[in-house]
Image (tube, rainbow, N blue to C red; front, top):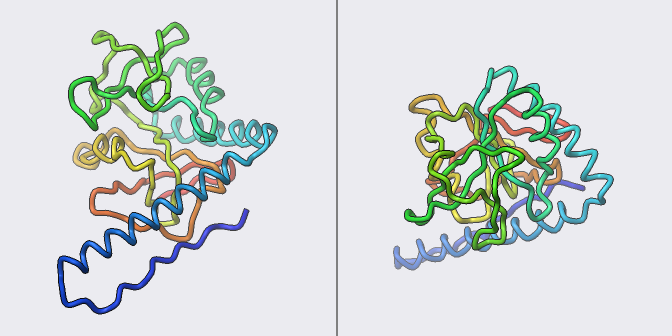
Amino acid sequence: MAHLAVEVAAVGEMTDVTSHAKNCALHTKESRNQIRKAIRTARKSLSETEQTQASLSASQRMLDALQAQNAQHVALYLTHDGELATPPLIAALWQMGINTYLPRLHPFNAGQLLFLHYTADTPMQPNQFGILEPKLDVRAIIPVTELDVVITPLVAFDLMGNRMGMGGGYYDRTLANWQLKGKPLPMGYAHDCQQVTSLPCEYWDVPLPFIITPSRVLTF
């Protein structure tokens, strides 16, 4: 699939600064929503065979990258909405003895995530978005700063390392200060068709130092 080019409509001269700012924000929001719709359609159009091959290729590249980082505590996600499948990667991490963790929505702090140790026996339940997450168990929670790597889902990315999620900002909040301690290291995980020419970004968006696809390992 050809990479999608993103164009943001130019805003004409406006004397009202407030109106100008609102108009810019509206165009940015519209552009982001258009990208989300196009990319979600593209990845869901992949055949089952294409999805399987993509997940196997990407998981091997991710395993190599995690070994290079000597990662022992890795957070990732369960596949949803046509995302690059994670079960092959999770199975391989378990076989290697690497601890895996899944996010769940924080029950008390809206917009925040908790990460819980994930095994084959972890009880799961759907959250408000219909995504499976571990049932809350305080014994299984790991502080974000003790994670070595967070493999982030994403809807789209560009060649500057910019990431676009679903718009909730959960991972941007989680990773906002990762560079202060150098961990957890964020790594994007996506189909090749999720690349766009450029993304309209906001100040709170956290760029990724690594993005791994079935065909490439991108570093920034």
